[in-house]
Image (cartoon, rainbow, N blue to C red; front, side, top):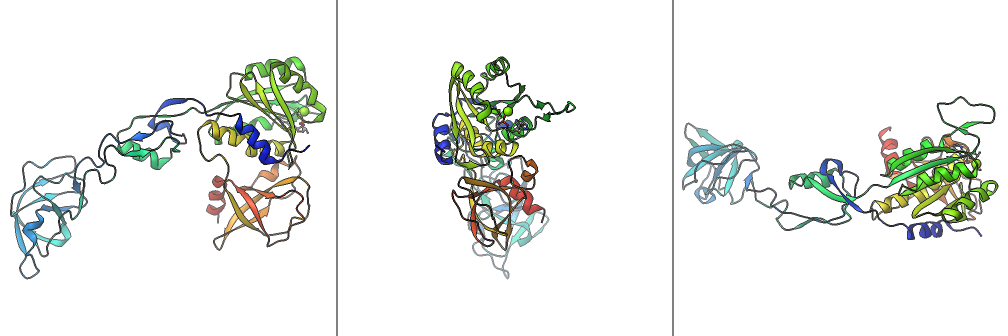
Length: 411
Ligand code: AMP
Ligand code: MG
């Protein structure tokens, strides 16, 4: 039986729980998810202050002011940002004030300096100044006691900035998952080794490590395990310290029994044939208590199944509410001739044309053509048993938002 993609994902996610919270410095918190809500302990801004360079005054003093009969006020001092007024403002007085400086007690409005005339010891106003004019009141941004960010909020630059404005120095966030990455295969050698006949470089571990890091995880590459029981057993044993184990290779029919035996011995495992292309063979189980996803060996299949299954797992572990990539509608710029009984994920470049998404594929789509991933920022989702699709038709695209910026930026 071929398992539908959604069902495979659902089964995997059902057994994944968020990791425990940890405290991190605010400066380290970008990209993390809040595990505790943040309630403001103070007002932001903490005091009423001026939005302009100008003069603090009493609104009531200016009510009769006109161009013909300006109201002249006595200038009694200056208050700069970071300082406080030396005295109370009285009737008929004004104080020079700079942007961000506290409004002196007694004043209730600020007029910007461009709208005034001034001389030695005085300033003139030619129109009434409304109460609160150019005053940023205490708590106008954040009032003490309000919920600023809820549990589950994803922290980016805006959230970090708001928390810094509150003087928050550390936050409680969900821990980043440590991901053990193991390549399997007798044909593999590390990238710094010359290739002997029959050998290829282990590219999957590098691709997967980069994808793990981009998904917020901490990659722990464990090298290559030969297709031998002892070596696989030893390496998988070491992998159990991690929060997730990602293997590649050894899940297709030829290797099936080897991995299965070890998994049976040390945990539980299901081998699934998932109804997708590329990446049909997929293993999922637990080694001890550590979830394991066995990605296919073919590099493109490994990359696609990482996107579809491993990335959502890592997002869920980190507490993100949104674990899936956004799906958008894109208009195909050319035909997709080949049809497939299986769900087909096609590497593509999605761009904007006159404000609408368009998509073109990135060349040969066989699962060993890793360069078909280059220049792609989306996977087109071609439904099971779809007939060939004509240029101009609309398809769903799973968008790498990071890649979209790059595609748009290069225009
Ligand atoms: P397997 O799933 O082990 O049968 O591997 C399927 C295909 O992927 C074979 O052509 C392998 O040589 C290739 N392959 C497996 N693991 C890797 C890897 N780590 N890096 C690059 N290619 C791999
Ligand atoms: Mg293999």
